[in-house]
Length: 181
Image 1 (spheres, rainbow, N blue to C red):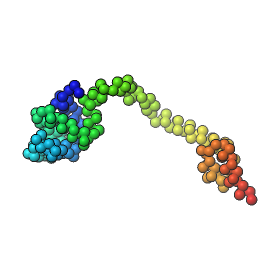
Image 2: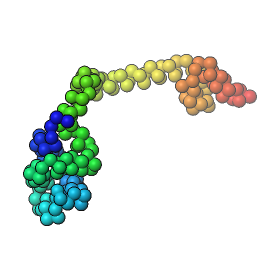
Image 3: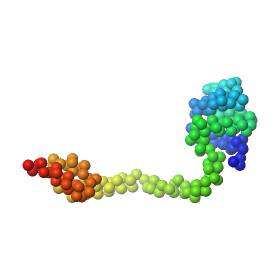
Image 4: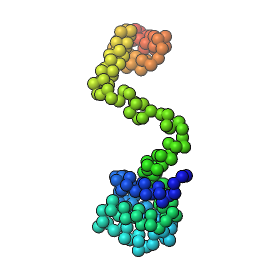
């Protein structure tokens, strides 16, 4: 790891303050984790200050991050540990984590961006409806074009759609045989 946790927290602070996934409950969990497990990092008095619900969550989080940066490297590392424990999706989407992941994994750099991987997503709903209608039309032509079925065995014949031609003929013959008697 090239950067220290203190430098990483400096870089990630803006992202963490802007991330809407860190709501009041999650920030409280992070504060309680730091307070209960590591009271030398966050004392009871500091924890109650950062848990004050009269202050908006983004302000409390900003003050907490500034406080942890002032405490040093160990406090920053424990904050990242608490973030990883309670809010994994935010932890893995941090700019420093993404940069670290991209620098370690050479295959990640070779993959195209998300928009280029899913080429059919930009065609719109009419393209989907036309493809779906064509597939339904072909299925109906296949079903009603080949099958010469009596009225009583249509439900059973519908079940035979997924079977092969010979198996379907045997199934239709079996259903028509009791009708003739």
